[in-house]
Image 1 (cartoon, one colour):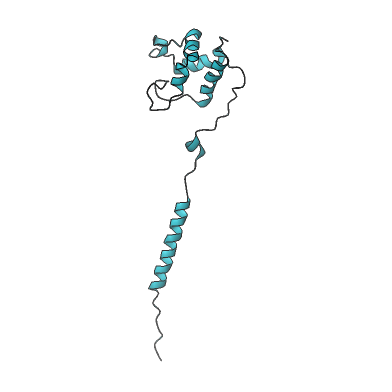
Image 2 (tube, rainbow, N blue to C red):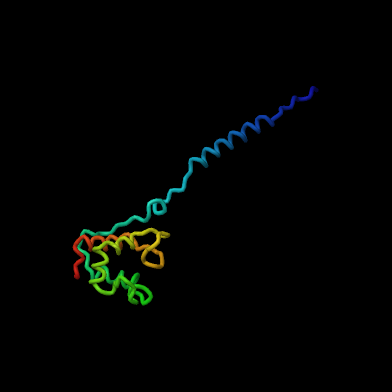
Length: 135
């Protein structure tokens, strides 16, 4: 009986492996990491169309973030423990400028380098836009 011819499968295997690598490269290149919060920041849904109250909305934020004994509650300028100091600093723009800075920028407030949430920033801006009332 004659011997059966053998088929050399190495070229076909190399071709299949090459196609698989090519398809894998296209697949990986087409993927991307798309997390909305990391790309654009967290979604902010805060209502700043209503009047902002200095005593109810801003004082708690100032007490939590600004008025510790080692910061503006300890006599550092500007004095943010009373309406007059907060209003003056806000209307002249220095407070809003400082709290709007990005991490790594000199002068960022709060001093610990953690920016206030966007809704809190908008409360300060709305209050200033309304004339910084002592309400």
